Image (cartoon, rainbow, N blue to C red; front, side, top):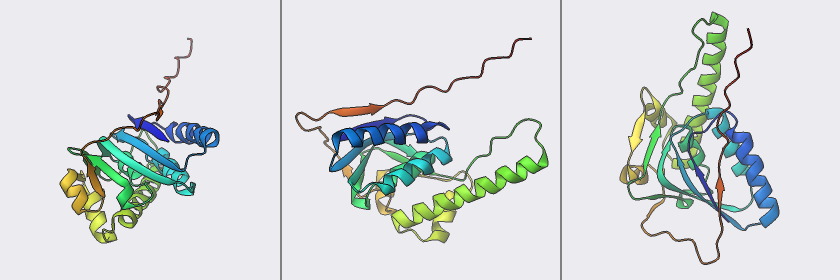
Length: 194
């Protein structure tokens, strides 16, 4: 079964995508899942939810980066079954970096401490997952994630164990159906009447 996932990863994307994918898998009972993937990142918590779901599946999962897998998107990309199942088009780019904190303008110190603790846990999980999937030692992975992070082109991604190969010519086989995941746009809260 072929699916396409592209775009930013919102706060609700994890639950939306996993529910959508569970429905497709239940309906089609595929032996293999091929995800055509591109994301500039977004919600780390949604990414962790998606990766956790992919790890529960007993089918072979191949993920092909069609342009970029950055930040939380890289975390999802690493959710393929094995390194050999993580592929990229030539010219694909990859980015790992520290988490960013989103704080309100006037924020109590207790909230800053709480959010900092959560961000540190998420970063630790990203580094552990990156290290586990690529074979890069945890101390080296931590350096790659520090500061503004590290960009990889396809050659560097191959050398670092992020991808297992480059796809030069990809075609869906005759009769294949491409299922496209489209997360609904974020809904802005309506202002309260005065």
